Length: 376
Figure 1 (spheres, helix red, strand yellow):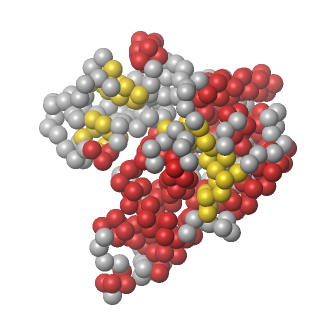
Figure 2 (figure 1 turned 90 degrees about the vertical axis):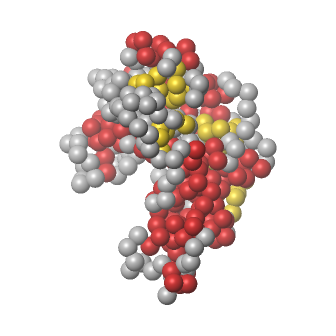
Figure 3 (figure 1 turned 180 degrees about the vertical axis):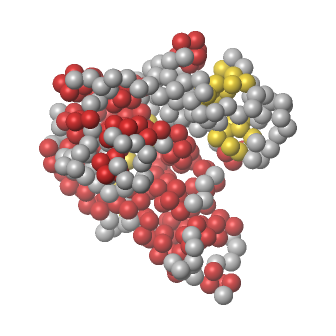
């Protein structure tokens, strides 16, 4: 394959020359000057074909479906396609700067989100926002001043939360109401695009795919999302509890673990949105925001009383307090997609007593083979 790159070629070459993990922009991946590269957070997907002989230049692609045996090229790596697959962060590693004083940290974060918004608006494209009513998507919507779309089943938390948040913000809202048949139809498309079949990934991707379908049908070019905010700013309960789900012994350390999980998650979301014909836009994953987030002190991250404290303080400069302070459910639960996919699996004969019953149902939908009920 000839040289092809997602990202600004000049920025990427500068990142290579200076070994700079956050050179500006929103990530990169592809081939430049004979090397495969992928940024330290894996914001662009990149795959190589594992089913090729050692020493030969591997076939690579931005999506898994075009490869015989796709494996992800590691985030933070730069290597010839003929070399063995490198280790993650073998060329660029996630910075670990000293935290700033709280007021300086907040000011830097506010400047960073404005920089990210300006970058997102700099391209000539029509953008809509995947809006759930939570602080993440609300701040994206306010910064980009873009139309709002929420997806979910009629009685879902996300639909209600989006309506009340849009009202508080004085904004119109398009509601994409789902039916069970939408999930059955979309599952094979999501699996084909992402190469993933496990229930959790599919439950997370389905709302993105289904809202993206409607946004694309309405004539937009791009879908903006709030992805990355929970990982960057301490949005998960586990970073406060420091339970078995994290290895770190401090909140700041647990947040870094969350940031390091992004290279595994982001290809799913990017590929899902792209499968609808839209360009993904994730302002909070801009290098400026990542750098500012890494400099937040513990007291601006999370504790038992409040998560994403610093991020909410910045959001409150743009949003009504009731929206800036709002918590929300994860999209697969807030949209009721997880509940309905589980219900469909059980209706098809995949009972909860069966190990990984939703995974098996997903596989059946993709294979056009018999359901569990047919087999019994």
